[in-house]
Structure formats: C-alpha cells, structure tokens
Length: 164
Image (cartoon, rainbow, N blue to C red; front, side, top):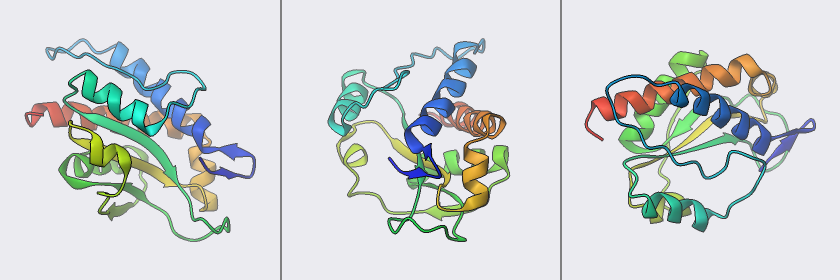
C-alpha cells in the first residue's frame, strides 16, 4: 500500500477494520452474523488468499477497505470516497454520511482481482485519498477511522436489510 508522510495505508486500513470489528463484535440485533477477516494483525495475505477466504466461507458480502493515492506521489486536491456497483453505492453513501467526506463516485473495477474472482458481491471501499493533505490527516486520526468504520458497519446492516 501507499505511504505518505510516514503514514502507511496498511496501518490505516487495519485500524479501520479493527474499529469495525469492535462494532460487529458488539452487535446484538436479530441478524445472524458470521464474520471472517482476511487480517486482524499486521499481515499481508495475497489477493488470491483474500478472495479464496470469501469464496470458501460462502460469504454473502465481501468488503475490502483501502485508501487511495495517486501514483506520482505528489499531493493533490483530489479527494473522496470510492466504491463499485450497488453494494459499493451502499458503502459509499454510508461512509460519506458517517465521515462527512464527499463521494468521489463509483468506478468500474472489473479488472481488480478480488472483484473478478469473488463469488460474493464485493465492495472495494476507498475511504479517502492519502495524496490529499486534509484527507491524509483525517485518515490518520483515530476518531475519523471510527467514523469510517461506523459507515461501513451501517452499510453492512443496510445491505442485509436489502436482502444480501
């Protein structure tokens, strides 16, 4: 993943997932949730391992958390939360509502391995741009990470309410 100003994308993503895990672990509603994580520690499973886990688990949803950046490494004014298809629309709507970030929009992502090979509906959620100074500050902030996790949690609950 990307590194900007000494801040690693992998660490931001893991912190968001761990905040999401806290929320999911405390769920006490009427839905029966079985949750599988590709990582809960600083490990790096391959894309093939991640997709295989979702497929083997016969997952109803596959949420992949990321931060975006531009290849050139320069800071830019580009900002926003990204996703793909209807599940991604749900994720984007909920994450932007929880964080106050603007929606970058949905992008075609059929060339991304986990989207191509997962048997479950997939949303690759780009929480923000590490190459935007304000968003990098937000992404590195624990409260903002919890807001992003809340948005993803809300998206998961909405997706299940919609029949996923």
